[in-house]
Length: 402
Image 1 (cartoon, rainbow, N blue to C red):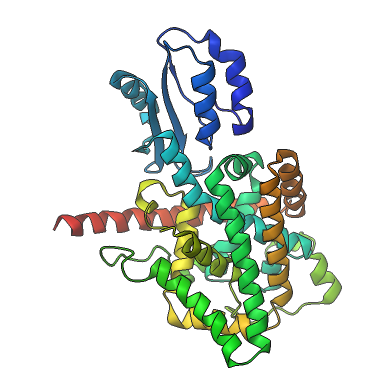
Image 2: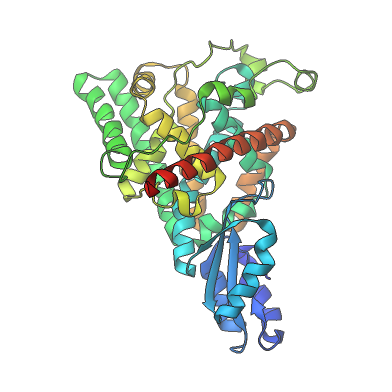
């Protein structure tokens, strides 16, 4: 089993592959399979078997019932059976794909979500702000966003760099995400300061994205929503204050400097990160539900649920559109987000792992001291939502049988 960073797989297999025993079964646990496939085919002896794998969840997520991809690339049935028996202790759900299918599925379910969370984190770090501690983004779907941003940055940079840089489909999606965020922000500005026609252009763009991604014809039947209620999500909010530990944390630099006053709970904002994600999917013709049951990660499932909750609620979506057009309190945050999204897109386009690491770790450093509580609450939140998802899928399967 080769469990190394995707960018290192070729060199490692080059060194150790030729000495593989005759008839051995070789696997890789890299997040991007194209380099792995090339390395195995180039350096492994032809008398070895290749059955690769990839668990589609993070190390802190319970593997029971989670998708575990198995790739029978060059092997007889008994070799696949051996790998299935070895990995059965995880009690995961096997998903059988080819190398190419794996990279397409992971790009469609992870590239844009990672780009969104990385951009949010970089935007907050650039603004020197922990907004949930100022009451700016607290409660409901904001809870999911904040917890997942901190969850992403609590991990190692290479977990996300390989997918972004080495997966061609991911590069395309990250680039489109930055374009969507930029174009929507420009439409917000022109619509808010212009006339009826300019305002209508922004509304039309959002409604087009909603129809393409969530509209009629995307699913054969009505499905129950993914997301738990905002009231339940509030149980996992980092914005609740104070506790002894939280009182010991230093305030946000911007909070200390400008004396920001927390607004009321569930204050409307533009939700630009979500609007851009749906707009990106719509432009690329991606149906997020296509791989949901097959191989969706918990983070993708949760963020899709957040987007679904926003776009399928007429009142919430109308509130986000109105806030994007006419409210100025979050305008600077939206600007920082656009700059961050474009920066991550450029970073990925350069294909430079050192640059990616530097950008990631600079942002990560800003959130040091916030990870312990966020990871605890985030794990509980994901567990609660995954439990409801299992029940939902079982109910829908039973209804399908009937």
